[in-house]
Amino acid sequence: MLKMKIFYELKLFENGFEELDRLLHYLRNHKEIPKTHHKSVKGFARRYKILLKAKADASQKNIDTLKMETDLNRYDWFKEKLSEFA
Image 1 (cartoon, helix red, strand yellow):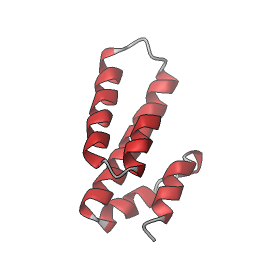
Image 2 (cartoon, one colour):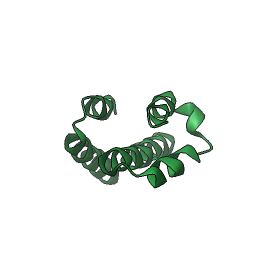
Image 3 (cartoon, helix red, strand yellow):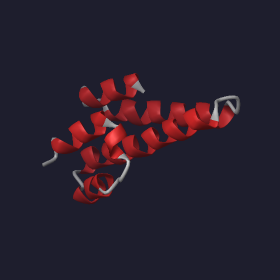
C-alpha cells in the first residue's frame, strides 16, 4: 500500500491503477490472508480507487463519496488527500 501512496504522490496515476489491480488480484488468489487483514486492505483499495478516479477526472462526485465515509478517521492519509481538493 505504501507503493500505491507513492504513485499517487508522484502523480503516477496509471501506475497506481496497475498496482491496485495487482493488490486485488493477490487478495483474490491468497485465501490464507486473515479476514481482518483482507477486509482492511479491501477498504483501502476501494478508497484508493475512488481517490484516483477523482484525481484523474477532477470529479467532485467521487470526492463527496469519499468524504461521506464514516470510518475515514482510521485513514489519516486519505483525510489529508481529501483536504487538498478543498
